[in-house]
Image (tube, rainbow, N blue to C red; front, side, top):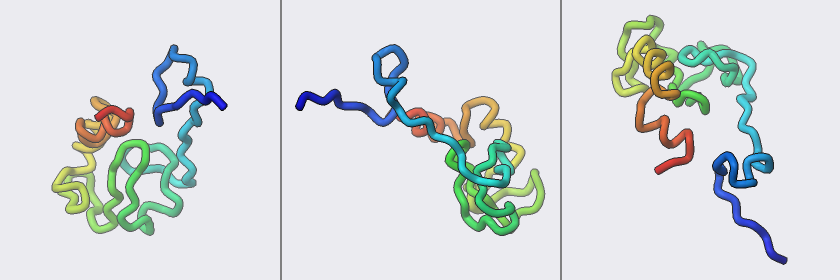
Amino acid sequence: MNRKKFQFFPEPGDGTAELAPTIQPEGKYPCPCCGERTLPVPKEEAIAFICPVCWWENDVFTPGEDEPSDENHGMTLREGRENYRRFGAVRKDLASKKQGTP
């Protein structure tokens, strides 16, 4: 049997994009950073949950937007949101992982 090999994230126009599974967030509650519904429980209960959309690690011990988050290497939620708007992830290097590039 002759099968075509697929990469995890096929490139548009190469004939594989229509066969690629679509990654959909499956949570019921919004991520505090990107707002996508990726959290399975309310953010107050989602200890160390990492959002698969923006890569923000939920920090239940940092209540404010401008307080450094230990789980996110000292980044504030406000900085994470701004980075998500700019790069599509909380850090530029994580945006490339999201797209499947090295």
